[in-house]
Length: 423
Image 1: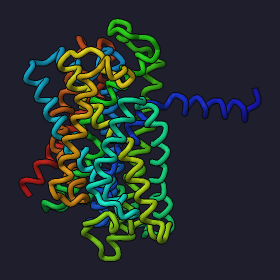
Image 2: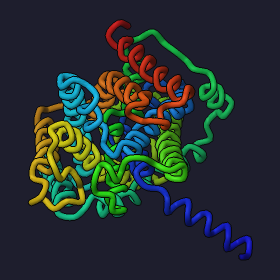
Image 3: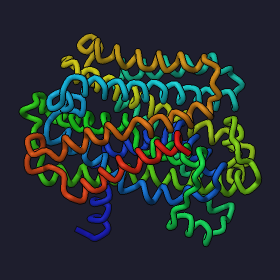
Image 4: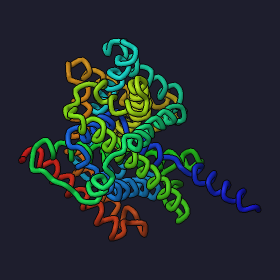
């Protein structure tokens, strides 16, 4: 086989093997994430850039644990918590997830509607419910895989931040220093931004989603029972690891360049307090000119259409697995999974109701990330305990390195969240 053909084959195989991890990483850069990174860059300049490099191994470790948990046990995170912990732990974890997810859904819908109004003039009160109905209808009557295939291409718009960062010629020595040397300020605003960044990159809904999607992958290959799904080969674990690392790298790269672009274009010109989508979109003006608003809107809408089904779906997986409902799958027909789809639709509906409470959409997206950062640590601890037990994972239990990264992640997110209240 000619070398060029072989190389193309390896590349094709690499992309063909990308699945739950890539979608999880793309969904991580949701409207709430874009807003949080924009607020971070605008308010603090390049100072938060170190968080992208620092959080990458932490989020990879957490998502790898979740992926391996689903692959080895044949159950999602909710099902494993039910099986190995008391009921109060199970329902408490569900409650934490639902609170974070519903607020995040509301924030994402608000951000999508705000961006739509910016470019079309359609009032938020009309577009927000419309987005909610379209998303639920897509997921219920089509399949999430169809939704993901359509809308994950819109997330490529986020690469416009990468291009813009090079167009505006930042002070690269300062950027390199901020990337490699952590900077801390003992202020409530700084810890709020830090907690928001960690919360929107290492989010509770991603834990439940990742493990459940690994189970869905097994179902697609005909392993319909838990017994059939239990266990994973070295090759399957290696493929999953590549998938997760690639997805998290994509997520953190986008995060890094959104912070860098907004720091260079907004913070450097005195716009440090973002209140509207139009102000956030100004970061893309050096690349797109008057089209910056359209580019920003496409990114917000595309990531929202991808992320909201993940948020609502992870809620449905958690409740269905905890309550032992059969048919907890996005590939099941609605008539065979009424409870599952009922939770999914209810999560979107309650999130939508928050949009009519009069919150500023940018602030709502930012504080939803902070809330995720506050609620994530106890769920990370549960993931760590499960994946470190031999009676759960057998020989596939966590390595020492993964345990160190996992406990470090939980501890640092707890300290950051405490700093919001103490500073």
